[in-house]
Image 1 (cartoon, rainbow, N blue to C red):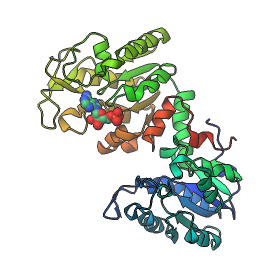
Image 2 (image 1 turned 90 degrees about the horizontal axis):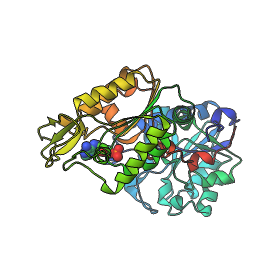
Image 3 (image 1 turned 120 degrees about the vertical axis):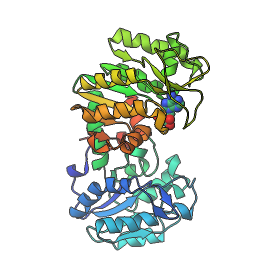
Image 4 (image 1 turned 90 degrees about the vertical axis):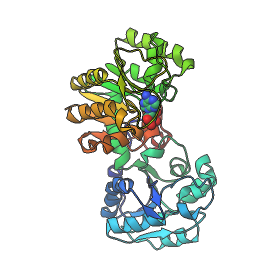
Length: 397
Ligand code: AMP
């Protein structure tokens, strides 16, 4: 799955290239409030422009659920891209995405021109990967470039289907970088490889835990999911998040870790509160037991040190999921300590999208990490060892 052709492996000069980007940007009153996804897409778009391709961009935005929703139009993205590229990006405002505007704009393209299609999810066929819309998209171009890692775990017309009807299917720089970092971390890491998992639920990460136990030297578990592990060891977890129906699974995973010789680190103390709330007073437990009427909202300071020390001896670290309710200042310390340990480490540090990416950026450590994945769901599926359809569909080298 890792040895995929990229834009640099093919000739794009004079070719019509359909590029699936991730332009799923946050909008407020028609204004883009965070353009980091557009910034992330620039290297691929610029490469194609510089190499004389006719660049046809497409993306989804939000969830219009298969019908045109003016507030989810990609028009503001076209404007912003024009500014960023310093050249006109023609917006093809077709409610059916591949309509008269798109066809006309594409037929008038010269080398290095850029056209942006309307939100692909205006079409109900998109998320069902139906052939008719895939063919319509493909009819505009000769080559398919996928550069949207955030949707690479979905088989849609614009991520998978259209490529089947085009001459070549390759990845752009964003996907290439994800494959380089996530791929090598899982398949060929510099050891020791330490994975840190947190976040709310064990059940969201069953496959990840299982797959990582086959790969890592150390697995660290924090966040809400740790309480199910602590309960499985017979500890009192009070009112903390607990998935009682996963206790057997967790026991099985602890056994697997032992059999595989994987060091499994769980919190040794807990920061808890009277109840879930932003302004609750934080208390620290002596050991792993939490008073019966209290709720664990973060790992404790001893655990933070234990986890940070483990990171120090790692050569590769993969982190997915916060250590506690980092959105609340009083319960962000564990997540902050882990973020800081990664930032100070010389290891290859990889943040698996979603909440941990938000936490790392919010705490100002973003630029200290080797790689922050652009897809939460996709990076989790990657760590589960699953084939991502949007990557599997690309041509092998
Ligand atoms: P996830 O999307 O599974 O990565 O979970 C992230 C969410 O888990 C964040 O919003 C955190 O606030 C939440 N979380 C982490 N630790 C805890 C905890 N101990 N209790 C409740 N929620 C938690």
